Image 1 (tube, rainbow, N blue to C red):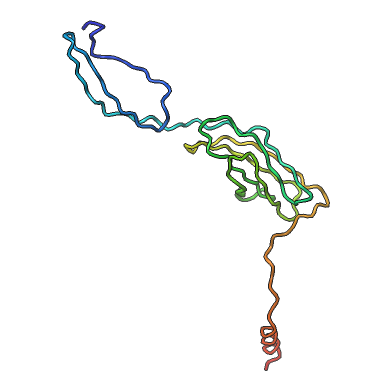
Image 2: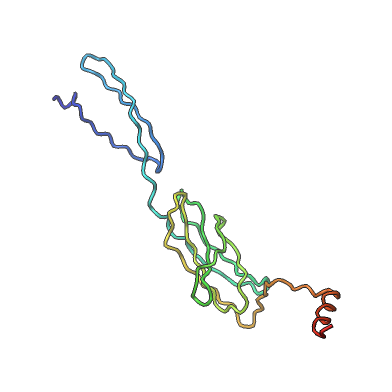
Length: 173
């Protein structure tokens, strides 16, 4: 067959959006000038599997006046960035990381646990397709002598009638 009038053609498409359906139509012109139009079945592009870049300049500081850790960073330039997930490693290095926040705001805060001396945080960038970066690490030292407030619930005092019942049962009456 003539190369110009061949039956096999290849068209390379670039700049397509991941996870998007694209319908298409083929228009062919015969040697006599007649046009034949055929609707194609369309195709779905593959999901994006490229993780976003890590956040930049991830750092944390302890505020002695507020008793909180302030975390800051610069988001990666990825156009499909969904959020940055901040977690804290447990003090005893056992167990799961503790979720702190998921945001695009390039900052969040954490209240450190009582008795904490050094806290280690991880920032992971996530895109809209669920791909995650490898993560950036920041550690924060709580200065010696800093008061870290306990966040345990307050215990309400017993009412007078409950006290009397307890003392009655203790005396055997």
